[in-house]
Length: 239
Image (cartoon, rainbow, N blue to C red; front, side, top):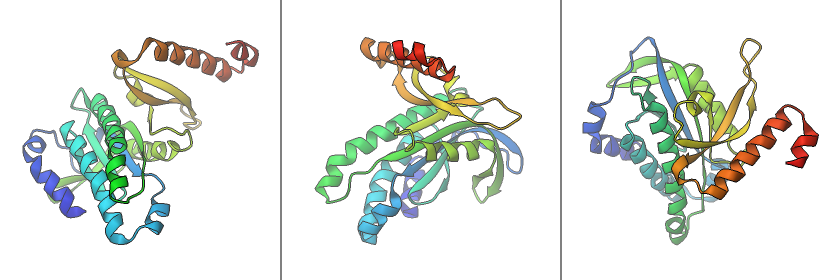
């Protein structure tokens, strides 16, 4: 798999050269995207190593290409999970991350017939995205992000995706950036005693691609959710 990643990095060498770098050894700002292959333990128990590697390679090749197409970097890779980042020096950092996530979800769905043809199981991915401080250490020619609130939050969000039965979860640090995207509110996330609870969202795609019916249903859903959040159960039931 590392040979696959090296090949993709080489293929995108020109693009990588044009991207901003992080300040090694310092705290920086970044948008962080985690991608995790759902139910990996169960899948790995049913597939021999060669077929498991084939499955991961098919998914990773599509996902990593999308990261580079949208000006992201790939500092960490764990086989069935990888992390991509976008420097906030790029004003489109959040938009690029969400576009990448939606592209990965679509690419994995389109892979289903090919996986079936090769006798491989249908899979899904979970994705979490957040933006904020990160701590960086330089290792070789590539900056590896080691810790920080944005990394911890994105890791937390990717684990929440299956709980809400969605493919991608983002927080307000992402949702607030672009009005041309539609999001579905999911829930509030406890942020601790010193910070207010924050909303979690599922990105749905560009607002212009949302049908009028879908838009109306989304508005009604949010009205009911707000009433439930305010514990106004009788009004929520009427809606």
